[in-house]
Image (cartoon, rainbow, N blue to C red):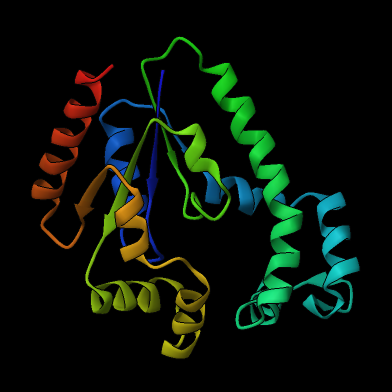
Length: 194
């Protein structure tokens, strides 16, 4: 079985690539979605309350406050990652085990290298886009300031570093038809090596 990671810095288009691959009929797991669901689990929120009490407005969890606490503070970010990463790894390995027998499975994962998951993947695709395109996408999508965007980028591995460690690079700053064609070429190459 081929386990293909789709990664990239924030706003580079990894989710767009994953969406196209999904429309082509492949299984694509979205690790960001797993992480978002985690914030609805009572036991996890209790751990957040214990470790990040300032992320609460009284009894109500405020994810924006948590973001403000961890971005720009590497120690706090590491503490949050120590709560989320073990859960995500267990879920990832469980899903991969369930899908034995499939030829190719994709996983959309921003922090692939940071979590050490590259060792589980046979191929790695990196989504890439020019910095200004990346910045405008994120500011528009997340309704954040340039400063907030720069804080997020500052704690992530650069796309240049990801590219060196990856097997394929797909530039997402192009018309959808061209992007789809480029994705299909990469998938065909991956499948030929099965």
